View 1 (cartoon, helix red, strand yellow):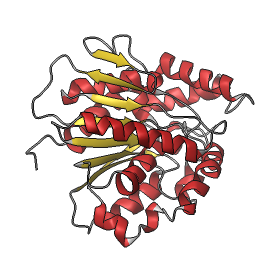
View 2: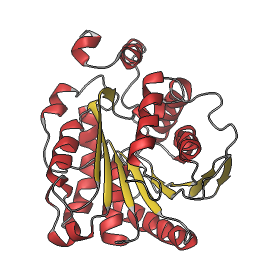
View 3: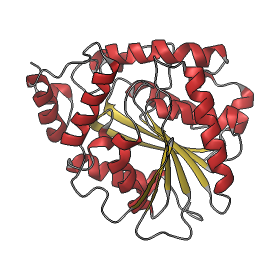
View 4: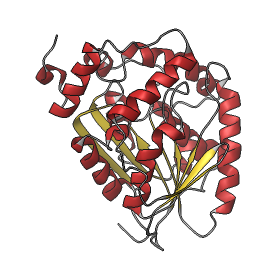
Amino acid sequence: MPDMETWGLNEEFGRLAMARKIMAVPTSTGSYVEDRDNAARWIARFGSGAEADAGTWVDSGEHSVVIRPTQESVDSPCVLYIHGGGMVYYSTAVFRPFLCMLAEALQAPVDAFDYLKAPEHTVEQSVEQLAQHITARCRGWTDRQLVLAGDSVGGLLALYISLRILPEIFSRIVLIYPVLDLRTERESYRTYGEGHFLDRDSMRFFKSIITPFFLARDFDPMALQGSDLSRLPDCSIVTAGCDVLRDEGLVWAEHMADRSIDLRHQHFPDLPHDFCLYAGQLNSARRAVAEIVRTAFPMKGQS
């Protein structure tokens, strides 16, 4: 077995990765329902803090959850959030501890959305419904800046919706270890393809589901059309160093650096994909989330 230094993970995530290997946590059982339950249980056990919801006001609806902090700043934006999971896994319930942490740290409401899961539903069905719900919510948040954020495939969805569905609505988009390259497997696929919480084979499966939808609409984040680039809002991108998606995020951030937008890039070299979900129990993830809050989500009037 490679040691933690070879893996590149920090000590906390290195121990958790080894525990995962020793426990022989399967990538898939063959049942999507069981796999989703197993993924949710893993995060609840090893990622969520016992007091994650303490003090926040939570309103759970059929398709979304609105979380308000104990103390809300008058200058805070409203954060609309699209969760990751390859469009196959996770839910706002799994993300709730992280979302509560985000709301409290920002002193801002966080409005997070569920969506239809693949492969039981098509990506077209999922994106269409998600876009309808986000559009309706935007109409209700007329007194605030709107920030659209998402992690992993949620980052890809946030980018697509901000450019193709609701252009010029959001003051900023925040992409957390996003899926961006739909065509190429870069070196990070080989370096971090196993044992780093998002395996290369799982990502290949997710891409086989989502790629046809976006390419059929001429939407390629690595080669955005001029009309898309002209509508790109201010953007924050977060990359993780021990992640199969690392290299595409780094390349995208470099490519966008010369655009006339406020681009903020944060890189956490020793953290894996999905690290935000572990902020309730792991200090390294908690510190990273705090840094993301300080830098990726600027308040009104901040430079």
